[in-house]
Length: 324
Figure 1 (cartoon, one colour):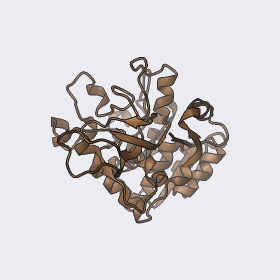
Figure 2 (cartoon, helix red, strand yellow):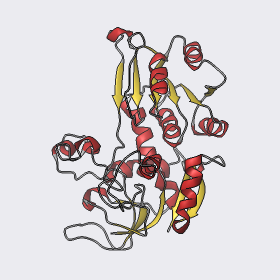
Figure 3 (cartoon, rainbow, N blue to C red):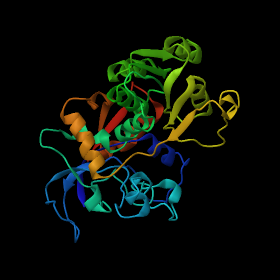
Figure 4 (cartoon, rainbow, N blue to C red):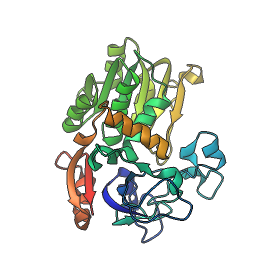
């Protein structure tokens, strides 16, 4: 059991509040927790009450077939919620937008926070940074690659930072929001494109000499998926981070009729304490700073106001820090 000291609101939480993704009535939502250990369950070793910990949005058990096969994010596949992987907080059990949080499979999921790191420096590692970086990793970006990232919301911004960490030589950020395009530059984009002003696909092909090596789709719409595919060079990789609803279609010509050697990969947020430890090391050694993404702060008592701001995307909001 941890006492939550900082958490956030995620776009997935908005889908739940709006009724677009159903969960049990009365469930506490939220899945990006930082806190202090308040109680330890029987059998949990190597931890002490009072230690600061980060817990991922995905809480793998460490023992099932998926976990032991190296696919911890898909923990529990074969169970009733097989399509949802190891996402439990605010989905199948009470989540993090609360004063206290019960952490399942604690031995596999409590990541101790180094003393020199603040809550604000690590809270986004629980989900959006792990997801965004994971999208870059899944694409197998190589040193010198050209990468275009469609949508510069929190996930897309982290994917942009991840592409830089992976060694991309040219990173293109695409969005239609001036604040987000400016932050894209700050997070590692070399060029930003406003889809309201330019033909993005044509401009990406011009900048890359025929198409990007990797396109990362971070919104989850038909248009952004299709534009990502059309922006690739032959044999390029589309890394999909968006969560889609309805019917997703792939035009045969954009797919080169299935013979263009394209690769399409999908990613669910990697979880577990070793993943979080590695991400905290990246922050601790100054490779990335995610604190600029925390644009607003609210007390838990005022979380309704935070949801309104976040849902309306007003005042240049990116991520909202929630403090009990």
